[in-house]
Image (cartoon, rainbow, N blue to C red; front, side, top):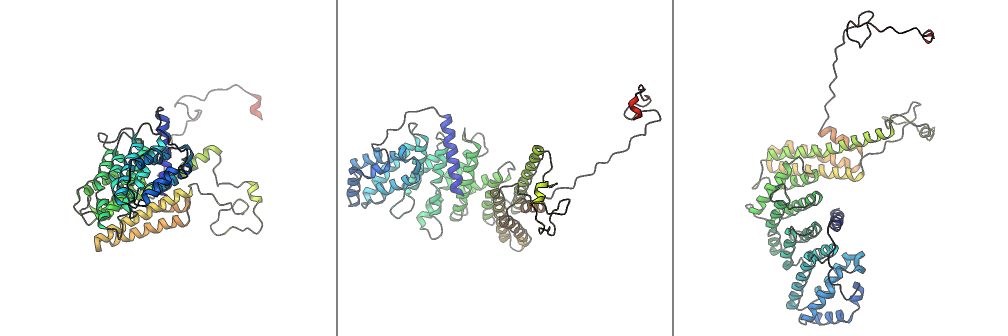
Amino acid sequence: MFGIEFRRLVAASCLLVCCQTPALPQQEPSRFDRLSALEASDDLKAYRKQLTAGGEFTQRHRQLLLADGLPQLLAEGNRRNLAYVRGRLASLFLDDITNAAARGKANTAAIEGLVELAVSERTAIEGSVNAALLLGELRDEDGGPLAEATAAVEKLLLAESLAPAVRVAALQGLVPRVEAAGAGAADDRKQAAVALLPTLDTLLLRIGGDEEAASPGLEPAVRIWLQQRVVDLAAGIAPLAAADSEPLAAIGQKVLSLLEDAASPVDLRVRAARFLADRVGSESVTDPEELIDLIGATAVAAVVEDRSAIKRIELGQFLSSGVQGGMSMQPAEASMMGPGMMPGPGMATGPDGSPLPAKPSLLPVATCLRTSWRLVSLSEALATIAKALGEKGEPLEQRAGRWRELGIAIYEKPGDEAVLAAATELAPEPDPEPVETEPGPKPAAGERPGLPPGRPRPVTPFSPFMNR
C-alpha cells in the first residue's frame, strides 16, 4: 500500500511540476538510446571485464558511468521500465567491482552524478526523480544501504528549491536505512539510523504548521504525505535512540502538535498516536491521561468522518433521483423474486411480503478497510499505554480490546453496516429534540385565518362553479 501511495504521489507531483515549469534545456543524452544498447556495447564489456578482475577505477571508467550510464535514466527508450533500469545500472556499474578502492571511487562518482541529475534544471523531472531514487537505492558490498550516499539523500530531502517529487523520492531513500537497523542489525547500522533523527526533526519543522519556518509552495497533499512518512520513520528509530535524545524529544513535541490539531488528517493523527503511545513510560512528551483523551477524539473523528460521508452520499442520491432509496420496490425487481425466496428474519420486505434486494454499501471497500486499520491502530496505542500504567490501565485495556473488535468486524465485513455500528458505539448521535409549538388563538366568526385580527373575510362575487 505504501508503494502505491508513493507512486501516485510522485506521479501527481511530476504532473504539477510539468504544468508549472517552463521548458528548459535538457541534459546531454547518452550515446545509447536504451539500456539494452548500452549492455551490448564494447565499452561496457571492457568496463566490467577490467573492474571485475580487480582493476583500478580510471578516468575512462568514470566517463562511461557519468556520460552513458546514469543518463539512461533520461533515455526515452527506458521510460516504461525505469525501476528495472535503476537496479540494472547499479548491477552493471557498481555491484560487481571487486577492488575495494575502485568500488569506493565508483560509488563516489555515482553519488556526484546522481546528485547533479537530481538538482540540475536541465534534467527532466522524471530524470531527477529517478536519480534521487537510485541514490537512495545504492548498496555497499554487504548488500546494505550505502552509507556514503546518506548525506546526499538528506541534502536533497531538505533542499526547499527542489521540486516536491524529488524530495519525496529522497525521503523514500531513508526507508531502507531505517529497515536495515531492525532486529539483529549491527551497531553501525543502528547508529546510522539514529543519526537520521536531526534531519527528520528539521524536515518536520519546515513542513509543519509554523508559517515562518514552513517550506514555501509545498502542496497540502505533499506536506501531509511527508509528515506521515517522517512519523513512521521516527517511530522505527525511536527504540534505538537514547531516552534523553534531544532530536527525538523535539520530534515528539511536533508530533504531539499534529495529534492535538483537530484539522490534521485522521491518518496522520493515528500515526502520531502510535508514536506517542510507544514513548509513554520513558521521557514522554505528554501526560498519559491527556494522550488517552486525544486518542479517543481521533477514534471518534475516524468513524464520524465515515458516517458523514454516508449521509452525503445518501443526500446526493435522494436529490438526484427524487425518491428515497430503499423505501420502495420497483415492480421489475419484485418480479425477479422467485416464489421460494421467502424473507428471512430481520429482512426488509415489500408491500407483497417479498424480500427487498440488499442495499449496496455506499462506502468503498478501501474506505472501510482504512477505517478498520485506524481503529485497530488506535486500539494498539491504548493497549500500549495500558501496559505502561500497570494495574491502573486495566479499564483502558478493555476499551482497547473493544476498539479492536470493532475494527476487525469492519475488516471481516467491510460495508456501511459495520462502519455505522462502530460509529454508533463510539460517537452516538443525540436524539432530535421535539419542537414544541403553542396553538394560536382561534379566529373570530367572520374572520379569515391568516388575516390581521378585526379584518373581515373578503366578499367574493357569486360563481356558478361554487354549486358543483
